[in-house]
Image 1: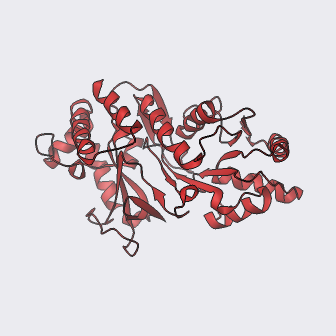
Image 2: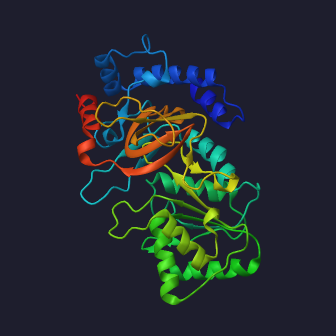
Image 3: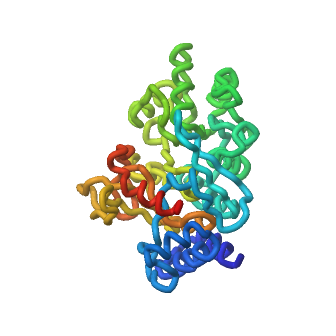
Length: 352
C-alpha cells in the first residue's frame, strides 16, 4: 500500500506542491478504477479512464447520495461510518479501508485551526463517545482528538440519552475556576441543548480567556434551528466564550477530510478553509459545469476532490450549495430537490 503511505505523508507535510498533488490524484484515480467495479463501469461509460484523464478535475464525480446504495470500497473496510440521516432518509455508508488516513487528516488540521497555541487543554465533548456511536465518523474524530490533544480533565458530557447536563454543569464550574483555557467540542444541536438548559436554570459561566468552542453539524432534521450567529451569541451569553473563539467545522460522512473556519488565525468566521490535499469547486446544479469563483459568484453544488478518500470515492458531489473563493468556501444552505437532477442521474448511472 505504498500509495496510501505516500498520501499520508503528503497530508502530514508542511508544503504541498501542486504537481505532487496532481500526480497523487491521478494515481489514486487509477487505484479506484481498478478496485471498485461500479465506479469503473461509470468511468468507462463516460469515456474517462486512467488512460484518458489528465487532471483531477476530469476524474468522474460520485454523488454523496450514492454512498447509501452502492458499495464503494477499494479494499475491505476497517471502519464503517454511517450518516446520522433524517426522518425517512436512507443512511449513507462509508466503508473506510484506511482509517490511518483519517487520523493523519485530523492531526494535520484540528490543532492548526483549533489549538493555534500548540497546548493540550482540558476538553469537554458534547459528541457521543464511540461506545455509544461506534459508526459515527464524528465520534471517530472526537475520540482521536481527545486521545491525542486533550489535556488532563478531558471528559465526555454526552451519553446514550443525549447531553448529560449535570456532568456538563460540574465540568464547566470546575474549569471556570481553574483559569486554564479549555475546548468544548459539540454538534450545533448539542450545543443548543446545553445553552437551553443553562438559560432555563439561569446558570451563567465564564470560561477562561482563550477558551475555544468547536462546532459542527448544523441542525439537519431538527424542528428548531439557529443561525451560526445566533448560536455564537448564546454561547457568549451563557459560556462566556466570544463569537470569534467559536470555530466551525464542515465535514460529512462521505468525506475523510474537513474544512475549518480560520477565525483563530485571523480569518473570517464564515469562510471555511479547505486543506491543501483537497480541492473544492462550485458546480451549476443543472449542467454540473464549473462556476466562476469569487465573493460575488452565484452559489453552486459543492464538489470535493479528497486525496484521503482514496479508499472510497475521490471526487464527491454534495447536495450543499456554496461559493468558492481562492480555496475557501462560504456555505449557502442545501440545494432544493429540484436542483439535484444532476446528482440523481449520476447516482442512477453508478448503480447500473
